Length: 225
Image 1 (cartoon, rainbow, N blue to C red):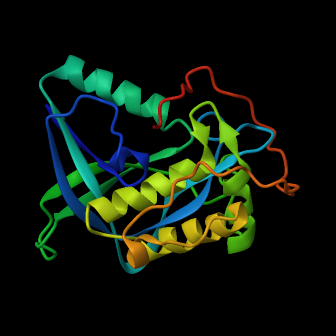
Image 2: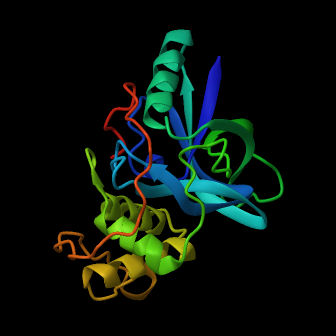
């Protein structure tokens, strides 16, 4: 028995579980969006964070890392239990084809698991949906949870994509807008090839983000990074 899981958010830089192999590559017809609420890692029910999920998007690709877990049922069970606790705000597991870097025509792997979220605010209580860039940046700049602040999650994702050689323009744009909120000089990865640290003080801005009527799930543990 063996399973593969695709990481496109914090799993890229911090898988957090024992794996046997990892491959850099991409999946097709998906793109990253910061449309998912996080209330137990980088935010709270009173001030939810925005974290990364996937949105169907034809003719696009999403770069990331595929991790393989093999070695018997017990090892696989432990890895999957960890992932399900960590990704508890994602309400779906999708099976996708995974393409290795430099081999775009033939999938290297099929049936790769990816944690996704249903883009419906009625059926998925964690789905925030899109918002203007400035509003998203303000929310990310000010949200804090047990794992740390929301902006570090975004900045680490920006750096992780730079480190694997596949910057995401959407992530860079959002990160630079958060830097504006924080009063940090803009130094995007594409321009300076150096990530600005996130130790600046949080601005004293009034949040207009509504409180989500959610409760922390007992299985949700602070482990995302």
